[in-house]
Image (cartoon, rainbow, N blue to C red; front, side, top):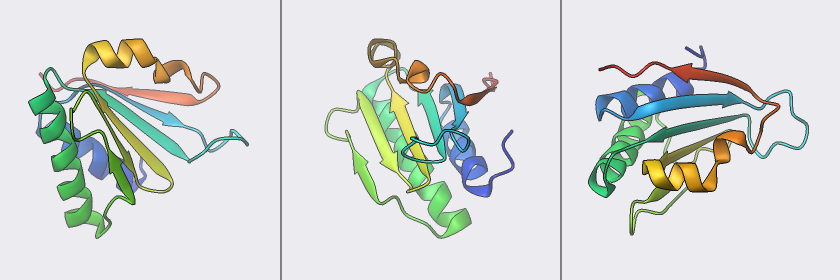
Length: 118
């Protein structure tokens, strides 16, 4: 796993609520990148997407003392995006993740797929 403490906290929050298919994209070597890292995962229902994003926020606040600058998508919980300045977190329903395909948006990034816990 990435040794960046905020990434570790984010992944812990995702795993706590059984988020799946976690991918960490390292954008630090890409000049035009909007942030340093993107963390992408999915939940099986809008309720799980909401629970994952809530747990990520709570875990990062507890371990790092940091709150997201912005959170969008909590109204419908199809895709929740959380902005931690240098790290963006995207929590998707599987079909939304496939449709928007942001996993491939930064194809030059170094990616690390985190194994599912189950």
